[in-house]
Length: 148
Image 1: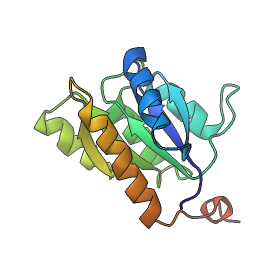
Image 2 (image 1 turned 30 degrees about the horizontal axis):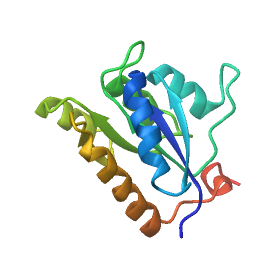
Image 3 (image 1 turned 30 degrees about the vertical axis):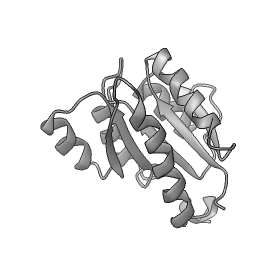
Image 4 (image 1 turned 90 degrees about the horizontal axis):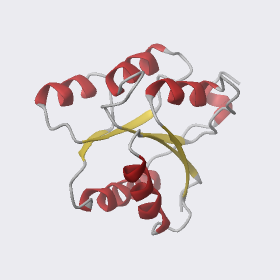
């Protein structure tokens, strides 16, 4: 069994966010879901800014690419430039099947690039993947990440 993992869903489509919430219910409370509508809000939660409590570790980010204010690729750029956040685990979950988007996302060391499907079959598979990932991977302690 793996530790309780916080999932930060960066998704501006409320219908899609609700589907993710429902899909998570089938995974037995292994995750705490936090949802934000864009990359700027995600950075604020990760940094504990703008009145937001800082997201607890361990966490995994599920990122859409097509977002208002600060898009997914711009978010990845800012994330990887931040010394406190640059090691964050990110899975992209998007409708974009463009090769240039895949290459750009992977250039920011994402853990995986997953396509949203009309029937949302891939969403359940993503959580199976996350379950396997969290079972096998060792997460560093919070103090180890911040030099304590």
